[in-house]
Length: 314
Image (cartoon, rainbow, N blue to C red; front, side, top):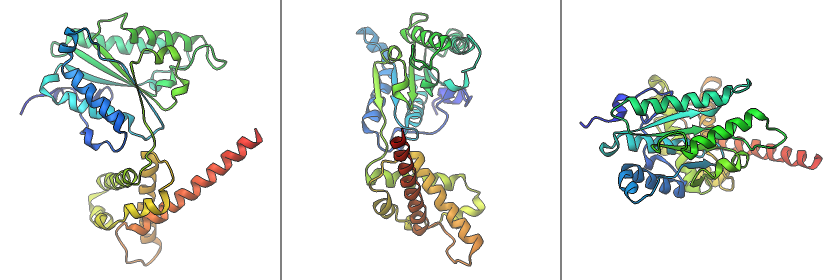
């Protein structure tokens, strides 16, 4: 078996690539998936690109939470760190919310310390030649300068980020991928440092929603105690995911988190029924998903109505 970086670097707090996530695991987002797959090939053949003066762009991922932004980056990391042609690449992960503080200069200093440590890794580890830094929750410290909500520290952080993204302070062997749920809040100067902007949309097609709902059910099964799995989850092939989506969820744009919530409440409903009634139905079934989906739609409509009323009052 060929050795890979995945065998050596396994710190889950900083390194991506140990979790098995492949491109075909990503449901929906065809444009973003195609672009990231192409980016993977660019990284594998970056020496050839360099001969022609072509640089690999930084990438900004944006869209609602639960639409697959982080998962797609994980699939890129898994692809790169398991390929013999890219053994010298490592993918670091940084949640920018974790380095933000209320103290003057600390946020920008924390950011610099983090990136400096990665540069030291590249300089001191003979097996490494290139790094990708994934920055999640990008808007948390990369907000627009000059607004009434910003202050001097915010501006300093944005300037620090600009400097790193420009590559002015270090060799061009670091690429950045950032993800944000709030694209409009990101400073325009920072946006311009990303050559590729990829939008992630909620799931809209029946096929995508059904696939994600079934995948969510499978994830819940894997997390469950094996002693109960064979009872609660042994009839997944009989669950009419398509029927549930078509009947209740067809017209709603949904994120992966929405669909996971529906799956989780379907399982909870079955457990509640087992505890409180004399039901003979032990396994999670279509009726549980119908109940959960109906409750979700009711809550969604209620929230939408409240939001419209709040907008009217304003």
